[in-house]
Amino acid sequence: TVDVVLFFHTLFSCVGYVTMIGDFCIKSASGLMPDSIFARRRESSILVISFFAIFPLCLYKNLDPLKYTSVVGLAITAVSCAYIFYDVIANAEEYGAVETLQSHFWYVQLDMFKTLALFNGSFSAHYNAPTYYAELKEKSFFNYMKVSFYAFGIATLLFTAFGLAGFARFGDEVLGNVLKSYSPDDPMIQLSWGCMMVSTVFNFPHAFQRMRSSFNALLNKGPEDNFIFTTILLLSVSVYMGVAFKDIAVIKMIKGATLGVSIMFIFPALFFIYLNEPIRFKRKCSGDINDPMSQVRRRRRAK
Image (cartoon, rainbow, N blue to C red):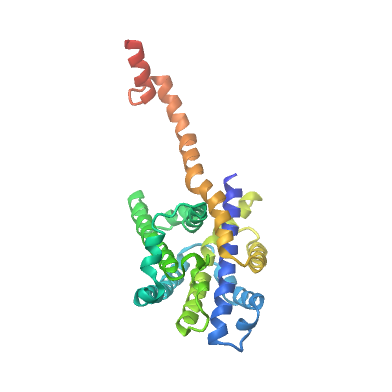
């Protein structure tokens, strides 16, 4: 069951990445390289990028070599975020940014559940948790907690601030992909689209590695069995679905509302109960004083 959920969760992640790559690429190239293949057809740009950039990155068998591309991707993302923040702050009066946020400060509608699903879809990197721990230089739960806290803290801050900035700028007209809401005539927006496309390419292999491992696990095979064939097959499926989907928000809402909830909230609780059941049974049989239920039974007998 876990491998099934992990497989489809990471599949939706990869499909979402491909959708974003197509959106960012064609919008950026339309202004920066109007005569190139990247500006003419979304499908063609996705295929070219997938073959020459994504496929080589997917051939890595662990996360360690991807740390360098991840740093570059974060730096590129920061540049794009910085421009959006600057645009909203510098032109706040013209856009009515403060008024928009104030008028929607207490916002109670069914659309809030879409927002929660988007958050779930964007913060469910739990599928790689065992791999992250295994590849720590100094393996300890404290180091793992510290790294996770910093990573999720920075991501939460940027994600929330970026979403608020987009809403302050466009109000109810903001799109699921905030950068798609901007005019394609702004050269800095065109550059930001290109930067985010590169960042998304660098993020793709993180989800893809777990999808490949889960797929092999479902077939009772090792994580590296039929490596090239499995990589080509799963990448082809992701690309095909990414071309078919046009709105990243739809993908993230489906993933966050179903698979993300299972991975983040339901499965950890089930694992805890399952792993602690033998300990509870042993304590119950031995009358362990540290067992809360044993203490309850003793108090009842005393009465």
